[in-house]
Image 1 (cartoon, rainbow, N blue to C red):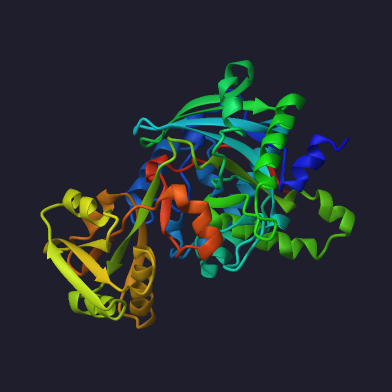
Image 2 (image 1 turned 60 degrees about the vertical axis):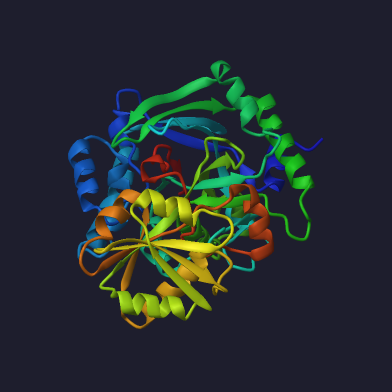
Length: 436
């Protein structure tokens, strides 16, 4: 009979040797939010740096993207790689061998979501728009975002993941049975998170019967898929990090024998699997901030992406949100120093508002008219969009019930279409894994 390891391999995942700091390390200072959050708020990262101080922290192992344009990029990356080696040499970690982690994250929004930490096979992942691979990007991959991350990973001894990958498990058969028996599992960590990040717990999953249960449940989902287009794992968060891991693996495997390729740790990337049907998993739209943009330039581009454009003033952010999330017409919210507008489009250039707005943004940035930031949550839009020369674009939510089928039928969504929760709900760096 085929063993559980082989069954999991056929499904594109593997158990892993997962590293967690030893008892005595302050996990609240160790864990920081994903590097691609708060990119317009350097004050957030300044607070994090002050809170961490000299304590061991994943802050010293990542490159917050708010700093990508700074002049110290090379020295920062060198310091990251040196710190990884130092933490290993100092024996900072305990190793939890050959298993998964069951994770529960509770946030201030009272959402308690469950996840399963596993190693995903990069050989089964293709982020190309026309991909029909088992593991697939759900939004357009911005190739220019890979090289800065690759500069870190290509020489890194560790990976510290913030990647979240979705499975479509309507029967709640993969993660939820483990959640129901979590009290019988070995707890790995239990800690508050900084900066309103909530609370997170994890348990080790390594008993043969539990691993076999995960394999059986995933097999049932896999066997029901269209064999010509088998989407088993859809990217939720961290696609550019997974794309970076894939790019590094493609470079490395050229130097390896077939036997080495089969077992090399860099062939895999540590991710958190989440069930799209988890009621605590909320899809939030990713909004846009445009800088150095005039009303005339913006709406001239909008007019070029729709047959008709209707603009109506509304009193507040809340009113704009209610109107743009109606099902009958394609709408988005617009904010500048004169206040909120709701924009309604007839015969737009894309089937969803995020696609139409991305076409608008692409035309403006290509002409050097504007620059753009992609932001999570409405507070930043409300604050920054009102500043002179800026404008904010508020986008409607994505229907997660139709998510997998949309990816299968329409291929990747426009880049930065959705986010799983607000910025403070994003995955914090906690687990590590050796990739060399």
